[in-house]
Amino acid sequence: MKTYFNTFILCFLTTYCFAQLSVKNDAYIFAKDALVFVEDDINLDDGTTGTDSRFYLRDEAQLIQGSGSTGNSGLGKLSVYQEGTVNNYAYNYWGSPVGAPSSDNNINAEFSVYNVLNDTLSLTTNTPAIIGTSYDGTSSPLVISNYWLYAYSPGTDYSEWDYIGDGTSIPAGYGFTMKGSTSGPQLYDFAGKPNNGDIFVDVAAEQTTLVGNPYPSALDAYAFIHDVDNSNMTGTLYFWEQDPTVNSHYLTDYIGGYASYTITYDPTANSGTGAYIESYLAATFETLGADGFPVNGSPSGTGTNASKSVRRYIPIGQGFNIEGATGITGTQQVVFKNSHRHYEKESSIDSQFFRANNSNSSSNLNQNLTNNSQEIQYNADGFQQLPASTDIRRFRLNVDFNNEVTRQLLHNFTPSATNGFDYGLESPNKSPNPRDSYFIDGTTPYVTQAHAYDIDLTIPLVVTIDQDMPLRVRIYDVQNFNDESIYLHDKVTGIYYDLTVLDFNTNLDSGTYSDRFEITFKSEETLTTNEFEDYSFSVFQNNTISQLVVANPESLSIDSVSLVDITGKQMFKKTILSNNNRYEFSTKNLSDGVYIATITLENNNKLSKKIVITNK
Image 1 (cartoon, rainbow, N blue to C red):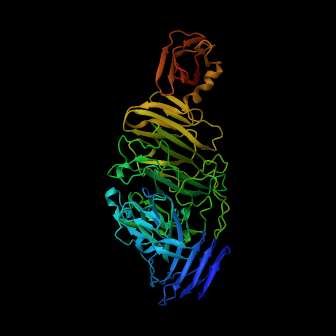
Image 2 (image 1 turned 90 degrees about the horizontal axis):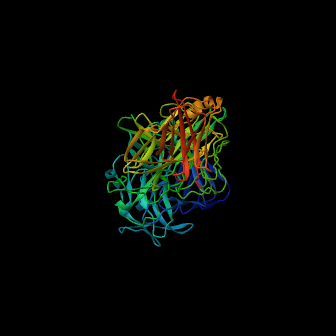
Image 3 (image 1 turned 180 degrees about the vertical axis):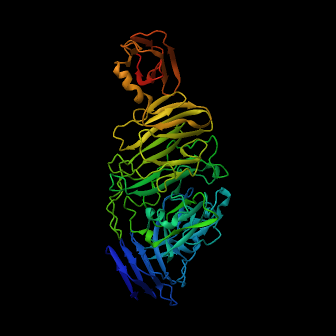
């Protein structure tokens, strides 16, 4: 049944459902804080000569359409607001929920910034945005600089950006870049024919395509990523962020990077009850060169990771990058579908336009058409709080380079993970930097990796740096390890550092360290402590007399005693020539701090113990 509106309707309830919807002449629909669901098509103006019929989505109202096969049509317009989050010097990545008005119901119309973006005058009136030629956009009146309007599909090099500032139209589903206005966050009115149905975008192996949520509703990242027709991509979504403190239009001044997001559902996790596993990593800021890649030797200038966050439900207008899967041939496609659409408000913690993280967001206001009994929960740091089950674990590593750049890595543990690539659980490193760290599988670097947990597992950790500098590794967001140790093993020094107790610090020469560091869950001390304990063997620091004491009551055959600081620098190594029941070593000339004492027996078993030296 088709529903006609010849005057107007105000939608203030929670949900409105229609089989078909037609708005004629100068009538309009005004939906406020509500879901409007239409099973089949929408016609705005119903083929008449007037162009005044309107469909307004306001105060987080959204439109979802069902499985009907008829496309939307008409010369009237659906209007929906979205707010950009950057100033005139930084990019937002966008997608358009509407195309140019068209009476053709067989296609989703192409769009350009010239024909869908408007300045807001009142709740029901707007005026087309002015497309200017200067470098800076303004808010009053709304002027969009055409200098920064680009699309990208698909490619690998900076030179492959496609300029669309001349009014070039792009198909529904593709994204575009646009800088903001001098006032900062800017409200835009997207007005045109609402997109509907299957929307295809091109991908190619290991190449990037800039896409965007093409619907006037939120998009479920899980449904999009795990659609059986979307195996042509890697399963990770990448979101651009720039340092908002850098006020420059010069590419060589830009400081930015890509956040990564993926999600999966493991029915075997959480003791067989199942669990969603969401993997998000903030952008690592780096200075960019004229070729668009990070500059060798250039610090980020921030000292920290970026501050924005991504959640499962992608808001209206949000743009992001996808990457074609390794091994696909030629140009393949990825599809957006109505079944991926979801009613999730941006005031919910689960759906936010890519903006500054606020872990104190309101509780989930989800009013989806289906019941989701396993909502993702978040902790005080804004990360997913996993169900309390030891078969599903995770930790993050913060790898700090000279206190200037931090690469954050995430490792998931879940029963379904394999030793190969796990779609929805792992994210390749899209933007390697001159100073970087990553997990590795074969030759592929990962910023997010997954395994089934095994206490005997070793996880290689690669570090690459462009000049001599200090390196620090910190652990963060440790979940469901229940006070178990997580070690960084430095295979050069042979020392295991329990990251849950102290950070790892060292100084490295420039180069790539692909076989020096690994994450383990057992140390040599773990393997040999029982032998030492059987003989009441002990190592301790006596700060009163500034001595390292090794108590050996059973006179075990000791080969050597060594002491290193937390950077791995050796303070001394003493070869033991005779068996005694006690050894004492002066620490009077050492600086206060944390050290690692290692006792090696003649059978090559070792005991490493952390000591704290405080010289009075």
